[in-house]
Length: 166
Image (cartoon, rainbow, N blue to C red):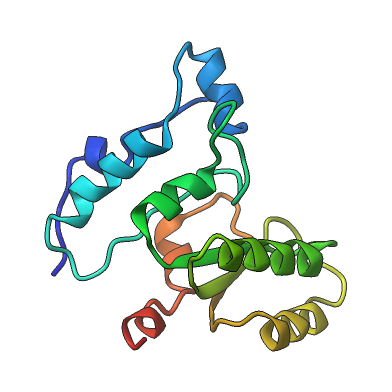
């Protein structure tokens, strides 16, 4: 079932500028809590949709504050994780370390997305093949560099049905 939700439920915490969440929150005079963020997610998760995607910001270990990271939200929820890999120099190391951290935190890596944040990297196909061979989850799609970014167009490059077949 697809649900139409108000923007405040879709994006309950929107901080500006686009910087690490703990820094953006401090600049806005706010604090972030993994429990509170997980509670906001649970409200949407219990609304009856077939699939709920919770988007993080900044990476698995990015701080929310002095003692919590974004990983604590996913751990609190007990959800499967989709890893978005920025396809650039260093992506193999970054992706493998993040996948290792997800597993160490007791969660399942459900899939991953290859995202091109800029012009296509050197040896893109070889890096993609390496990641497909080493990451213990299916590739859900490849999102090309889009300028300007268009979420609708980006979504057309991801096969979310692979998650529903688990």
